[in-house]
Image (tube, rainbow, N blue to C red; front, side):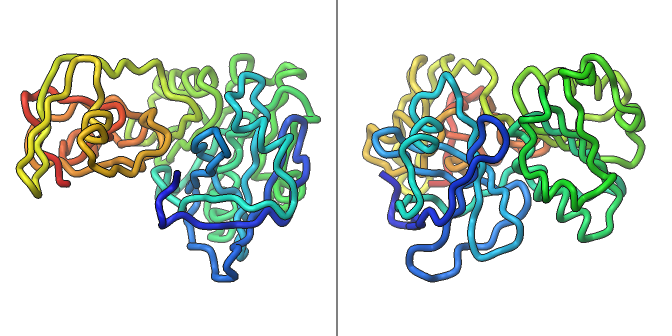
Length: 315
């Protein structure tokens, strides 16, 4: 179950939003304003008998939240339940927004989205438009019937370029000119793994530096959480715990009775990021930036390990 800081919301609207997608509008059940959020933020949604799922907030500025969920044919119950079981008037438990995918500051911003990867990037595009900033949003879809958020995209005008692979305009078939011009730009992208990996390869090919790339994945890379054994120490108490070769830090600490803010447990949501006071982490997450990893002062407990024999955690 979610902890006491979860938010109770009511589904006030549910509608299809492009083939295979459903948009849900959520309002505070208490009548109190929902917490503010910044572009790129996501929330956890508690699925009955299915655990937590993370969804990007795609709301335009308003006193409610909106998420858009694609029906995953390999769903373990999350998207299927939201599509088929949830109805208007139902109550949901959600988390407050978290943002480990903030909109970067740059003279020019290129946004690349594929499919439902549009959800965080749409709010970024609208924010950039309001600032009268220099940006382009490239959206990749298979067919025209998959287009979501059509009215909001139309308001962005020529700054949105839509590519349909059914018409021979996939990223593998045609590279947009602005992707070949990395000077003074940030590249922000989100979508399926294959799209993300190919776009990153193209970016490096055309001279983009890693620091210019900003992305969020829906699924983790194939991450191995096993490794050599080590110990963790709880700074506040001095208690030490052994982490075995097949265990995660989070698993060991929970078994010892510590309450941790776990959510995705795949190294993607950032809910269990914890400070490191001593030792060298072995980062295996999809959340921390290259700079954050290099600093070695935090770790994602659900998947990362240690290069050093001991990690001292700020707990």
